[in-house]
Length: 382
Ligand SMILES: [Zn+2]
Image (cartoon, rainbow, N blue to C red; front, side, top):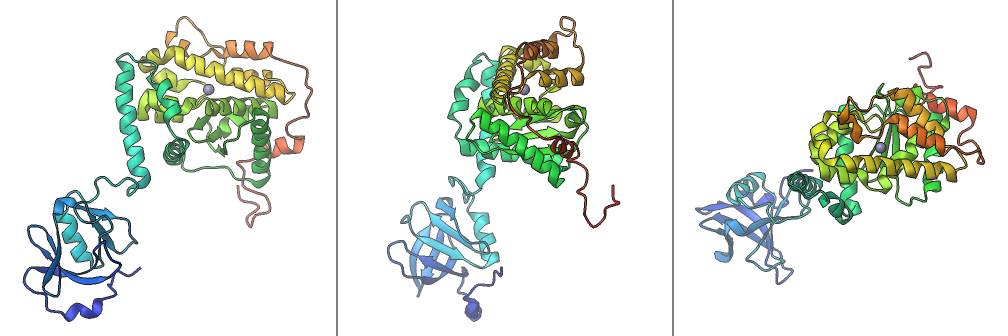
């Protein structure tokens, strides 16, 4: 906690001219710990007993990982294990001002921010490439993104979601249990081994979406319009399909960060995001439609495996979006028409052979997931 140096008893040492304070120095060849004085000359002079042990050019000095409250440094032109540890905040600040490249070439130091910054920059440049006529770039790059980075991208996007929606995650316990049961059943039927985080967000927008790295959000507005568990199951399976196909990651690369985030605002089911980014969508038209159809295929398969019908999902979507007109609104044509989707899912209707995914009580609990838990200290609180 404290940044008071352990050697603070040495404060009374009168600093020689040009001396900038004391530090601990390891020369990188032995484990010996040197108490040294620093001098800000042309290079950083590391002195002990009136000898200069080393002189580090400022441009070569880099930050090394160390505990908070201490600045630990290495030097590109010194032995690899040489370290300088500075406990005095004023000295650390002075050094930081002189060492302009302190934080360069240090992967991991800035952690998530650096990697995400890099990936967003990469995404932006990829978008430029895509727009200039390499339509398969995203398809080719997506498989190259490691799952760890994908999860980080998802974490960042999740942070945006929480800002946009005020972190209104519904947490009524019985509702949460029913929701988890539904998601688990779908995931098992889909044979997905990735860990999936899911939540219901309290917002009137009737939608759902998936984020890179296995996050699925259902908006309570869609839940409110749903009549049974199969309707919601179909939607969740559709979102899991996007995850399985890594569509969200591909979209992030394809469309760049901004439209991705706007897309989150409007979710996935109704395709409003696609409408707003119509000009971009024209470029990605065939791709988007294909991705949606593939996610629908995935959902249909999962529902069949569960012995349930995919038709309720189509009915829910139709209830939400209503009848859409094709020709006049050509920008919508990149998104599969709800009517077509309903028709397809109706064609895939099968007699029910599996048990209900939720009991009547569980379905009631899920519908009430956004109401405060009963039995709390303020039962009358609505
Ligand atoms: Zn979709």
